Every structure is written in C-alpha cells, then in structure tokens.
Amino acid sequence: MDFVTIDFETATPQRDSPCEIGLTLVRGRQIMETRSWLIKPLYYPNFNSFNMAVHGIQPADVKNQPDFRELWPVLHPYLEGQFLIAHNASFDMSVLRKTLATYNIPLPNARFACSLKFSKNIWKGMHKYDLKTLCSMHRINFLHHRAASDADACARLSIKALELTGTASEAEFATKMGCSISRI
Image (tube, rainbow, N blue to C red; front, side, top):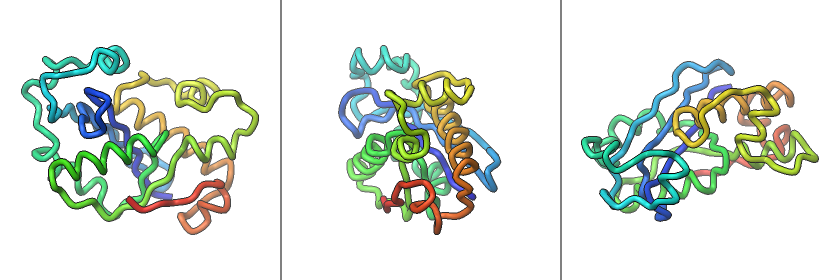
C-alpha cells in the first residue's frame, strides 16, 4: 500500500506558522524517502517560547529559508493525489489548510487518515497513544518533535498497523483499520 506521512512543526500557536515540514514516502510498505524542509514562517521572527522548547527550532535557523509559498512548488508533487497519514492528523491537516489559505494557494487533491485514531482501534487498552509511547512500544527509534523524524516514525508505525491488520489497499482501510479516510 502506498502513502505519504506528513508532520509539521509550528513557530507559534497559530496554525499558519509552520517552521518545518517532514514527509516520508512509502511504496508497497517500504520507506522510499524521508525529507524535511525548514520554513521561514509568516510571523518571522516571532516564535513562541513554548513552541521553541518543544521542537528546538529558533528564528535564526529559518532566517534564510524559503517561506511556504516559495516552498510549495517543491512540496506539491509529494502531496497531490496522495494518501496522507499523520499522527494527530487534525493538527497537521489544519496547519496545511490554514497555511494554504493564508497564502491563497488551492488545496491539493489528497486523502488523509490519522494514525492516532487507528492506533486506538488496533492496540486497544493503552493509556496513552502519543507517537512517543507507541514508538517506544514498537521499538521505533526517533527524535521526537522534528518533522522528518516524526514523519518517519509515523510511517514505520503505520506499516506495522497495516501488516497487523492485513490491510493491502485504501478500499479496505476503513474496515480493517477502524479509521475513515477523509479529503483535505
């Protein structure tokens, strides 16, 4: 099954303040590529101290990086027509939607699902379903709250879930994974 995992880090609580994006391409349950890009956010140089404490990205790190509009021609081919998976997709999809709206860029034609939601259906009875807890349980090593590492970890977790449930296509995803597929 083919999909792309996506993860954003933001500079502020505003959803249109991405300062990093990570993408992992999975083809036939094999990780083909993981990439990340630092992004100069709309609110530069204003970063929230809580956000910086979470991901460690500072204004100086993005000073000479492209803004989202400049980066979009590179990102668009990774997203257009794809099935996306994010851990806590409500956050990542809201960052994507809000940022695209801010820059007046049309939404890509893509579908998405949430690995947080399907993890709750597959590994029942856990008291926490955050990415760190799930990855620890499955011995997936990663650097939490950096976009490339989080996207890669989400891909590895998703592959394990697909294998465990025997899910081979989007057509059987909702039934076997217990999680609907939505459109952006």
